[in-house]
Length: 49
Image (cartoon, rainbow, N blue to C red):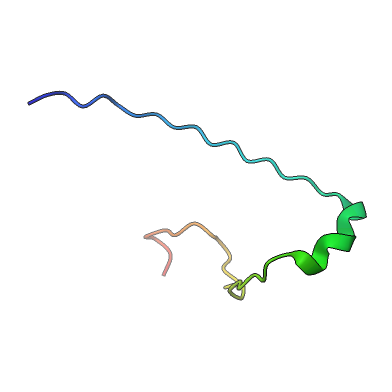
């Protein structure tokens, strides 16, 4: 079989807070966000029941 070359990806995310842009808040798309689950540990573990 032919060897498949390994793929490598890099993702960079930058966020900025600019309070002077409040004039645009009404033009933001609506966000449908779930309620917080109130977990003590956000990472699942097999030892926690």
